[in-house]
Image (spheres, rainbow, N blue to C red):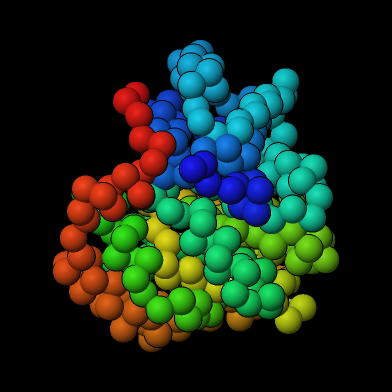
Length: 287
């Protein structure tokens, strides 16, 4: 029986310039996301000829409900994302980094996280390059996991407590649409990177009483580390003078250490029977 995807968020994937990362991301999405899930590939005039060919082939065969748009002229990462988010109205949107590698079950787990607590405005999964949400070590970049299905199953066994993060992290974040609109969306005038704009939006949401939560039951890998554009950190410091100290204190205190260690223990112990393999990757297909 096909999964009911009507309650799942829309996926927003900005198309980057790394063709191999795009191909890997689309393959992971097909393998780990229920058929019929809505996804929007938004291209800020970034894709070259090879990427366009990859997208064209993928659109024909993907089981997802996919749309692709391309701007004639580049407007910049934050402005482009804000434009796309505004077009989605109050819908909940899962924004992926262009080089994200989602593990099986990622979107369903993020949606469940948002549903458990109406105060959660942003839900961020674990990542090998997730800064405050990094696994297996806080604040450190690690290679992509060799067995993402096993890791996804291990994460799904954790108690869904959804602890607070200093801010959402850019590898993957599920945004509650009503909260995002109330906070005013992204600030494309002040920031050039999604990295900084996501922090700024998170802090504004927090000021309005919303929560920025870790979805410890989900994992989304990433091919590299995201970062700010020139001037972004100065702009954050001017608007949020305590931000740098706050994130530094979080990384040093490492309040998620026990949760990360529990995930490592579950990962070491969990087995993935063949019957579960089909459950976690129902849409897997050769690429």
